[in-house]
Structure formats: structure tokens, C-alpha cells
Image 1 (spheres, rainbow, N blue to C red):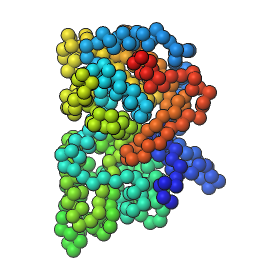
Image 2: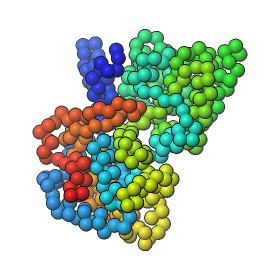
Image 3: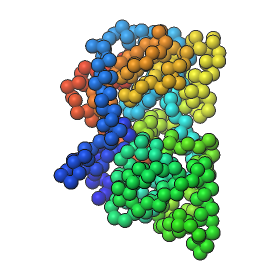
Image 4: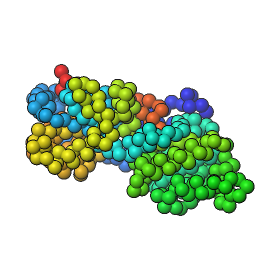
Length: 404
């Protein structure tokens, strides 16, 4: 089936456009959602219960937050910005406030982006890879399946298809890939040495290849390598990606091989920011002009610099925008810089002076547009509970009021 004939249903917790059918008599457990969403669904009523009544029309909260932003001499806009709507509003707010903007956990994405800028590479979408690849190489460990539980089923097009699992995979994970229909060859090697291992396995060509891994790669007509930067347990991730990309470029001299760098819902921010500013993030607005610096304007680096300077910290403000229902990260909570939190939950203590603008939950109280993890498909997360739409504000709603 062509990708254009499928009706995507985007999971708001694993970044995958779930293209599998709903429950059937042969597979009643196939409910259209990933098991990660099901396991976190119990948190939804707890998050909604914590939101004060009539929070969406609290004019005092808007006034206090606006004054805090106006008084701040240095502003960072960060958080878990997962929807196009939140990204657009956050970028506009940063532009008006002369702020720096960067998602909180963006290191993995920027290691891949910076490597592409330095080395280049061949990329592919999930749809093209599924329709044309006769060999998949998946690098990593079980964390990839924790992030995107339904990825194996979405990758398989049917029939016999080879899959090389390279890294540190458990027997349970191997079984999941096999259950999706793949013929699996699992190679357990330290992730640090995978690019070198692939190069050595193929360097002598098909006539002198002495490993099954090398034979599979050299026999393939179209190979796709999939990995997730945020799930790579390597010391120098940017250099690791450089080495893998160079091997891919070399292999393309004689064969078709492409990389599918799997992201998460944060892809929506990077794509939207690139549309609006020409840069994927890590920018500072100087007189509304974006200045790009992937090192100096990283969110955590920004906070570290101000934590070392008491005078700088006093006039600083961090605006946290959250489209998730997860707990606030501990390394963010521990920051001594004043915070304005725009999100569905405030379950952990922050500074007494911090402000909270409570929002609903993406996919529950409001719809949102997001990019899939391969950054190629824009799909809408719809809310099944339309009666809640007027009761809870989205991050975009709050940011819009702050800019009036």
C-alpha cells in the first residue's frame, strides 16, 4: 500500500504516525496507540485535576507573567515544544522579547544537525525506506523501542525482509523485531565502535567478505540505516555520527544506502524554527534578527553561564513551554534562575517566586499539528474529548495572551 493511501493517526507520546489498522478479531490488542501512550494515559486525569478552575481566563496570571517578562534583562525560551502551534508562538514571543530560544533536551538533534552541516549525507523518509529497502540496519539498544514502541511494525512492508540489529539488544527486543516480520541478524558490539565495525566488514568487497553481516550489506540493493541520536549511549556522539556518515557516503559510490535519523516530537520545533528563521534553533534575537550559535545558545549552556554569575542571574528569566505530560526534569527544577512555566503540570517544587500558567494536554483537551520522527510527515493529533476544549488553555493560547 502506498503511503498516500494511509490515514495517519499520530501518537502524541512516541512521535510515530501510527498507520496500522484498529482492533480486529485477529489482533484485538491493536488499538491504534502505542503501549507508551497507554501506560502514561493514567497520568492524564491527575494532570487535569491539578489545574485550577477557570485557569484559562485568569487575567491576573497573564498580567503578572507579562510584567515578569518586561522586567527581565535576559530571557531564555525553552521546554518540551512538540507542536507546530507552540513552536510558532514560542518563536514569536522570543522575537518580541529579544530572547534566546532552544528546546531543553536538544543535544541529540543538534549533534545530528551539526554532523550533516560538516560531512553531508544521504537521508530518506520512513515511507520511502519501507517501500524500497531490502535491508534495514538498526543501531542502538532497547531504548529505541522504549521511545517508539510501534516503530518495527511501521517499518515492515510485508514479505521477507532482512534486518541487522547492531549494538546491545536484549532477547525481548530481538523478539519484537522478529514478531514484526523481519529476518533478524543481531550483532552485539559496543556502540562506540559501530562505524568502524561496519567499515571493516565491507572494506574488502564481496569476493573477500568473511562475515554474514558484511555479506548482507554487500548483497543489498537498497540499505537503510536507522538510529536515534537521543538513544545513543556514546561518549562523542557528534564524532560518531560523522564517522557513520562518511561510511555511508563511501558506500554510495557503488550501492544505494541512506540514513534515517529518527527524532522525537521535538522535530516539530526544529522544522518550524527553520521555516520561520532559517535556523533549526539555538538562536538569539537581536533587534528581532535571529543570530545562530549552536554552542553558545544551547539552553543548558545558557543556564550554566548565568548560574555562575549572580548579577546576571538576578535579571534573567526562563520561560518553560511544555506540550508533554511528563514530570519537569530535575536539572531544570534545580536551576536557581526565576521561571515562568507554561504547561499541564507543576507536580514538583520550584522556586517560590516562579509563575505557572496551567495548560491542558495535547491530544486530550486540544488538537495539535506535529512532525513524525523522520521529520517528513505533518499530521494532526486530534482530541477525543471535545467537551474539554473550552475548559483548558493550550500553550499557544497562553503565549498569545502574553503578546497582546
